[in-house]
Amino acid sequence: MKVKIVQNDPFLKTDIYIYEQHEQKRSLAQPVELIFKDIKEADYSTDSIKPTISIHQEFAFALFKALADELHRNGVRTDQDELNEGELKALKNHLEDLRKLLKL
Image: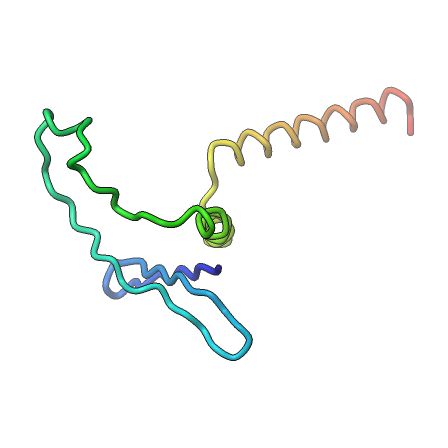
């Protein structure tokens, strides 16, 4: 499963394509209209609310990974990414300090 994100600036929108590449063909997920509709507070926890997207578990992980990779490629960083980058920077600084102390 693959995901492609295209910034469509003249129209101020982002296009997301979800597809699978096979040997000689490509299968494209059909468009989903993302329309927001108000719901009553009483309905928040009922079974009457349908999911925005429902995907079989067989495909879910592949979709999530492809989406995460494409988001990262487009500059989206999660809180965890920022935390990891901060920890890596701190570790590099610590190693540099140790080198100075040991005169390496």
